Amino acid sequence: MAESTNKEKKVPFFKGVKSEFHKVSWPDKSTLIKESIAVVCGTIVLGAIIAGLDGLLQIGIKFLTQIG
Image (cartoon, rainbow, N blue to C red):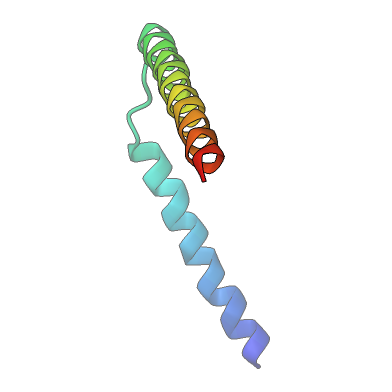
């Protein structure tokens, strides 16, 4: 008896998901490419900043541990 109620609940959920996907406005190819390039460039810049800070912190920690 419990199994039949679970199946009845799942069907409307997936119908709702399908109807919501039809409402999504998908970007065109040129917009997708521009936004993808922006994300990749931003990721590279952020990675370089994090790597630089990590290097500086390592130098600072080595300096502090050699003094003592």
